[in-house]
Length: 103
Ligand SMILES: [Zn+2]
Image 1 (spheres, rainbow, N blue to C red):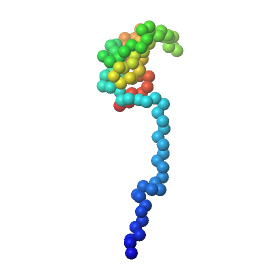
Image 2 (cartoon, rainbow, N blue to C red):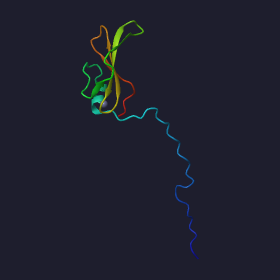
Image 3 (cartoon, helix red, strand yellow):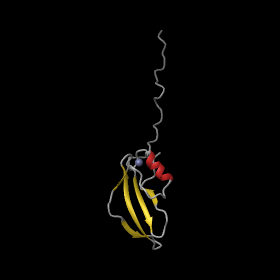
């Protein structure tokens, strides 16, 4: 008599895994330069891998009426898009990534 072993593979009947929500934008991990910039967003100089996207700054005013200029940069290494805000009467600028950095 041959043993009638159950041939059920261990994962048959396993409930389907819930699908991960799709990411709207494929993201790459931020490079070391961008992570360093995120740590120190008030410095004026763009890091070595940032390329200016628009040569003319976008000039506008905040809701409080403070004029500011904004420049757009893209990192050549990791593709992170950055905006550099330079407000009138402020000593420091601020670097803001267009999407949260992926670590
Ligand atoms: Zn980068």
